[in-house]
Image 1 (cartoon, rainbow over the protein chains, first blue to last red):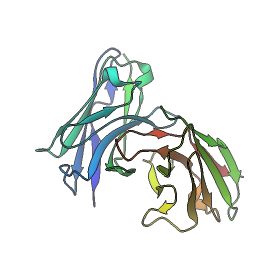
Image 2 (image 1 turned 45 degrees about the vertical axis):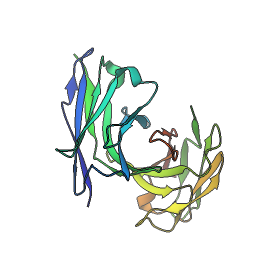
Image 3 (image 1 turned 120 degrees about the vertical axis):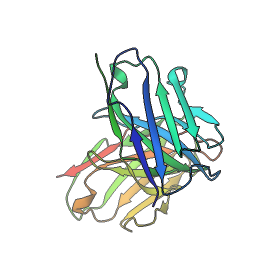
Length: 119
Length: 109
């Protein structure tokens, strides 16, 4: 059974960079059949796609966040990562990592991790 | 960019009710639409993909329909476990980018 687990600091200061890692177990990240994505959800609000990556390293970002987002993949560790720079309180959210089927929808999600931006 | 809307934003219903949620896209997305269920404190769970295909393990009381710009999620007989928030999501076949609808909360009447 595929599992995804987010990890990283739960508290980040304003103007700093948020860094999260998603560790994939029960399957290989190195498959051309899938992509890997980050989605966030501010408290009490809806879901927002942040960006996606293929194991080859090809990335796709939400235009509204593109200038601040970097997503990378480490196939040797079966992990992919998110960096979001210059954070503000508006970036406080539960951050989810997920797997998507190439040309299709997301099918597996991590449990999510709350990141709070505060001094 | 494709925008997604959902109606209603909140729906109050009773166990056994037939429930319908509508999702509209700002331009045609063919059948590239998924529905997710989310309960408080949990990750979203895939219910329907490609507008009408039921994900494995999802009860048959859930069904999806539509194409182009208008889609519906129907729960034929609402069960206690179904009280949750439902999101539609548009995706496409050529890049892993997508947009979610704002969500519909189904609560107890």
